[in-house]
Image 1: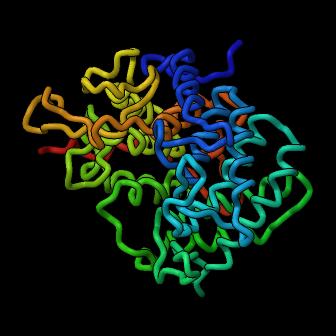
Image 2: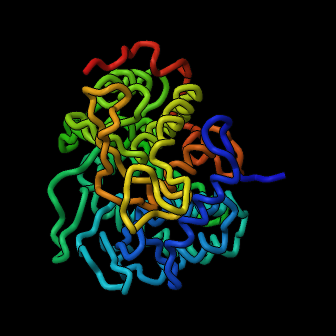
Length: 382
């Protein structure tokens, strides 16, 4: 019996594997997973892709992805923002959220394979990364967003980044317990960040235009229960176009498949599987289903079957987004988009051993309200 997830009416197990194979085709011999053929890589989206490979059973490819990160980790535990296929640094800035995500990925791989030896080998990489991130905390316990190449930290924190970091810290703490190297202070640091997220929204640089700032505190269980439901309801009409998906930003008709899939994941975390499933259904037009390319482009640079186009800009004056919709960025089929879809399918179906990576609860979190996100959100009128 296959352990690859599928979701009836949305995506089959064979299609999930086809998408994972397309992701694997973007992996270079050194383990780096490109955004698209010839494109760059950033550690966060690279890890997202590695987790998707594990969901589809491509464990050796996932291990190669993590080993690449271990090989290029800086002595202080960090990574640069972007790397080119030739191994050179494209953007030397250091992002704390990008650095912390290794803990999420390695914990997911452990849960996918129960390979203790690999987890132990990766532990020093994880430990250095999380300790680096925590070294950049402000007095309120929240890490600053980024560090310049000259070592100068930026002077503000981001909500999405902090939400992701606290989840990574909890994953790192779980991993440490599993291999006999407990780091309980990481869980305490995560709890402090959650409290700031819940009670001090002014602690973060305003990024309310972006969908990620809306759903990410829910996706990572920084907000749970009634507070999480209220947050998703409060932004639903601004960001969701019924039948099409989630806008990347609230003032443009630009639907991005990764944001839509991640919002589906957030709904799954809340227990609203119906809404999560609908969101993934709406991602279907982003999927390339033939070797000749998706119907939205005539480019010779057609994506492989199973790839997902990053975004579609719709004409909202026409029914169902209109026939004049266009790809944006043009012709871009991104690895992180495909990975987000696979992870959302797994979270909804709870198929693999690691499917509750985002859904599980821990002692300092509370979740009690699993009713539909859309009960109190009215359809958006354009």
